[in-house]
Structures are given as C-alpha cells and as structure tokens.
Length: 288
Image 1 (cartoon, rainbow, N blue to C red):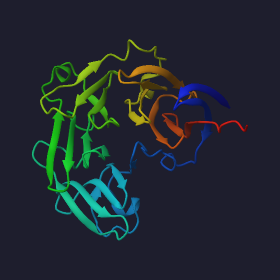
Image 2 (image 1 turned 180 degrees about the vertical axis):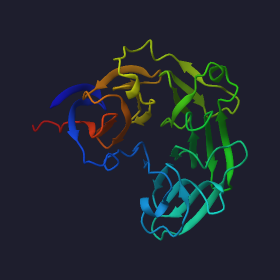
Image 3 (image 1 turned 30 degrees about the vertical axis):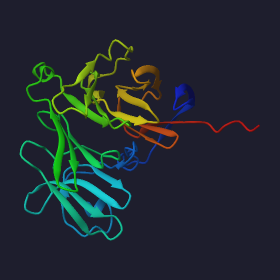
Image 4 (image 1 turned 120 degrees about the horizontal axis):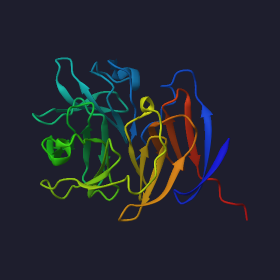
C-alpha cells in the first residue's frame, strides 16, 4: 500500500507500510541526523552493541553515537562513575571519559549529537527520564562544559511543561526543543543566559486524535535545512528561517509514532503498534 506525500526533502514521497520481524528492536531506526544513535536494552554491556570494544562499561537504555573512528556513549563505569566514554572504533580501546560534573546529567543522557562547527558534543537528558531537562555542550579536548541549559525553575516548568526532545540545528547557532504539548522552542547557543523562545505548534496544524495509551513523546530531526517533528501519528516538516510549516506526513494506521529517523533520501517512522513502520522515499528522477 503506497501513498504520495509532497514537499518532503524537495520531492514527492511515497509512504509504504511494511511489517518488520517478530523482534520490534531489530528494525528500530537509528537517528541519522548527522550521527547514528542506537537505543539498547537495560544493562546491556557496550560489547553487545559495538563488537570488540575492550571495556566493561554498562548503561541502561542510553545513547551511542558514531563519529568517523570514534564512539561516544553515555554510560556508567565499574565504580558507578557517570559520564560519557569515548572509544576508538577501529581498535576498541577506550580513549577518554568525560566525568559527570555536579548539576550536569551526562551518564543518563538519551540524546547525543556531534556539532562540527564547534567540535563539541551535545548531551541531552530530557523529561521524563529525569525530573527536569538538561542540555550541555561538551568539549572533549579540555574536558570542559562550554554551554549548558536546564529548565529547573523556568516559567514553563512551573506550569509542568518540559522539553522532551532536542536537536541542534544545522546552522550550529541554536538548539530546537519540543515539549510534551508539541510546542516548538529555540535556544540560542551564542548566549548562556537566554531562555527558550517558545512558539505554539497547536495553532499551526490540526491533530488526529489517538488513544491515550498510544501517545508517544514527540521527537525532532533536521535534514537539508528542514526541521521535522513527530506528533502522535504524523510528522510535520518546517522550512525556512522562520520554520514555516510546509507539509504533514501521515502514513499507516499504526498508532502514534514513537521514533523516526532520516537516512539519505528516506525517512523511517516507527509506530506504537508492534511491527509497523512507514518509509517515505524520494522516487528516482525520470529518465529523459
């Protein structure tokens, strides 16, 4: 079953419903917005995810990102040290560890992203994994936290509105966050004192109602200058400096979208319903 979607990644898209294997973790998509991210089961050793790493660090459902020949992982050490470890992807040897400083949740991060412009790693520990949301930029060259933000005591947090996902924008100047009510917000990386500039997303789109038990927290991604945000069973595409809503992707009747990824010319969306995911892809150019 295929459906056409327009204005996505610069071309017409096809939504295809497919079934995956009986193991729902087998085909869960990686986050391909510049780096790969894998979610793994509770208390799996890092050797289970990336074979050959010479270390016994463990982490519960944390993030792993691959960058050239380096592997970064939010994890816990043998002596209960929390932080982010670095391994050589070729030899498997550990090359560094960024210990978690006070007030900066690193060992329980659920989002890691490399920023080429500043050569820093974004680490985000978001609500509801933590009581509040924390985002930090880490410089591994001198083990320094160069920028950080948390929503403790902010007006939004006092109203029980918390950022639940974050993505560094491709221009390297801002971070986009989204709260559990689907509002988009932006943090200026050039200032350490500024707050989130929120914009109401509910005014931009109509939402299809889903069963409460199917609701998944929204996720964000960027690709080719566009911003993507999932809400319930749809993915919205925002374009331009003002992030105007240009299209909405809605595919299979598989319930809420729990995660999605962009790789090359394809977008993969994993639904709440077991063994259901959608794939949108750009068709090949016509033969002239």
